[in-house]
Image (cartoon, rainbow, N blue to C red; front, side, top):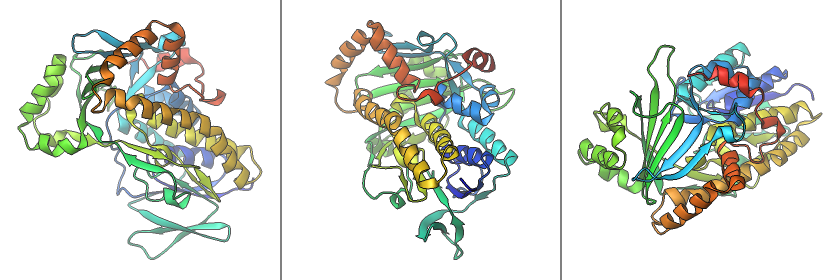
Length: 411
């Protein structure tokens, strides 16, 4: 198709990835971000093989993996250290792995690639509305009387709390979960294995997770992200108490976390993560499309948020590259992404109450179910495929050259 003028609203993950790929196709792309400067927000995350495939396409995989922790195993235990769930990427392929990553590492790599592609990013511009006049879109921003435009395509990628997804659809679901997590990133200091996402659970009200997340600099110490399950309505009560009470609660479930907790001196170091469930009947309209958490935010139980956002960007670029007009390209994008996204939305909603809820009666059922699945190879393989983000991912999302990736992710 002829070159498009594209506006990308949001510079998190899906936004810059889509901007880079579309610019390489010859389209004129401009990114708008409400944050006043580059600042990644959020705890460490697990980059899955599906996300790695897109980073390879972007040409930044080796750079990102050089700062990552190579994760080969998910290990969930109960307080007596008995195994509830134990999944290994190697069951799918000897060269397959996940990558625990410090969030700024990915954003820095994406921003460097944006600069290389000569894509302008307008920081501190909060787009609050957009209007379609004829076949063109015009953006309206806060604190400015001037419009931006015209644009042939608007990409909404402004995150889970998007105020602009309504431009595509006012129907759907935007529901906050009652449970979230306290999180902290600190030095590992040998407390947890570098190759394992380790979780310990007591019933459905207590969950503590520890993810090695590589380093934030070339010679920096290995980092680990701590996640502690908490009801959102109890956060204020916890923060009104002495910090040591919270630490003792964590230690009562996971004594080995002591070296990590020693690094926390103030409640200001502990951030509350809120989870939500966003579902839309469609992610595209006339000259507009919603990517990433703005269109399908979900609980992080399966660790797919960043990976789904990257896959969104790659699929959108592929559909535009193979079409001779924008409307069929966007329809094809929504059709091709639907199986992958719908599966993980359903799977996450189903899984979340088993680990974060007031339904303690689920605990014995959870133990029986996962014990059976662990010992049934087809069931265990399906759970591992789900963990790796590969169910309904499509051939273009499958990782390639795994052995080479393993060498890159050596930490």
